[in-house]
Image (cartoon, rainbow, N blue to C red; front, side):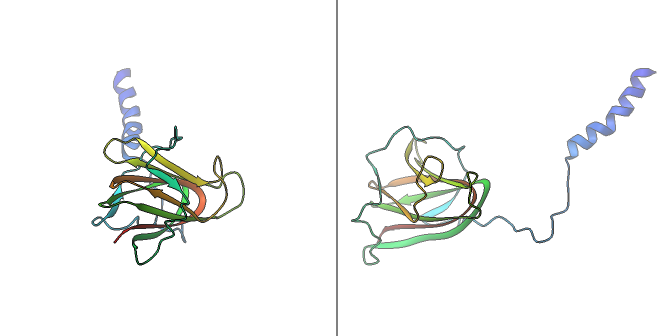
Length: 174
């Protein structure tokens, strides 16, 4: 008799655990920004967990003066604004011709050690980190910044941050 009573008592607990908790969305809350289109040279992708870069790849340069986004040479194929609150967004960019130019500017929502942004770029085929830059933590707080990738290919961009607004633009050769 006791095992049956115990089962009856635990059954509602298991049902509630399986159902999960739901709560109404607070008034004034915002939906997360859409990372962008699902077709074209830059599309949505699944984010990788944040990691520290183990070195600089020869395919990657920061703030190269020869790639100042000359509109006659480089077309902007993607632009979006993101707000981060300990979340990640990922994009997949395909550059048929080099270079791939990523420009980003960061505005902290609140000054302090909790505000940061990390942009990790991987080779989409192998998953190897080939470039990383960001705002705060181990990076400078300079803004805007530019990352240039000197080889054609598929690039996985992982954007991760907290308490920052980021404007991201991607340019490729016309």
